[in-house]
Length: 113
Length: 114
Image (cartoon, rainbow over the protein chains, first blue to last red):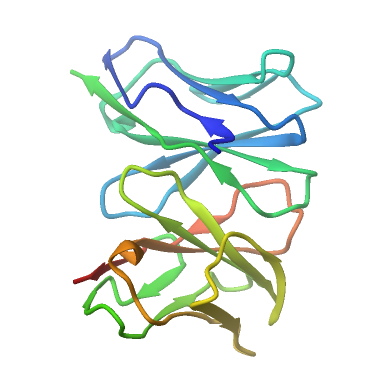
C-alpha cells in the first residue's frame, strides 16, 4: 500500500525554466510533509517542509504547495539550475512529532543546460 | 559530509549470514533512525532510537534488530540474510524528536546478499 506516490519517475527541464515535481498521498492523517534531494552515492538531503496548517512554504528558489483537499503537494524550483539534477523524494508523517516518515519512490530530475 | 557516518559503505555477504551496520550520528543529535531502500522503492522506515531507548518501530523484520549505545552510535543487526535483504540501508539523526526540520541522513550502506 503506497501511501505516498510520486507518479513521475523522471522529469527533464531546461535550465532557467520552472521545475514542478508532484506528490500525492492517501493517508488523511498525514499533517507534515517534506522534500528531500538525493545525489548518487549520497544520502537524501532535507530541502523544505510544510505543515498542514499552511498551503505554501517558500525558501529561496524552492516553494512547496499543499492542497489538502486533493491530498496533493508539489515542489516548484525556479529558476532550475544544473546542480538541481538529482532524485527528489516526497515524504510525509502523521501527527507532528511522530518521527516515522513515509517516502514516495522518487522523481529523477534532469536539468538540461 | 552530512556529519552522519555509516560503515561500511559496501557489504557483500552470503545468504544465511549475519551482518552489523554501524551509524554514528551528528554531534549533539540524540535521535537515530534506520531506513531501508530496496531497488526502485522509496525509503522504508525500520526503527528509531532516542538517547538509547527504542522510540518507534516500523516494518522491521524479526531477523533484524538494532540498538543505540551510550555514546549514541547505533548498530543495525541483520541475521539469516536472504536475497531480498539486498538494499541500501540509511541511518539518519536529529537533535531531538519533534523539531521542525528534516533529519540528516548518512550516505548509506549498500548490502548485497548473494
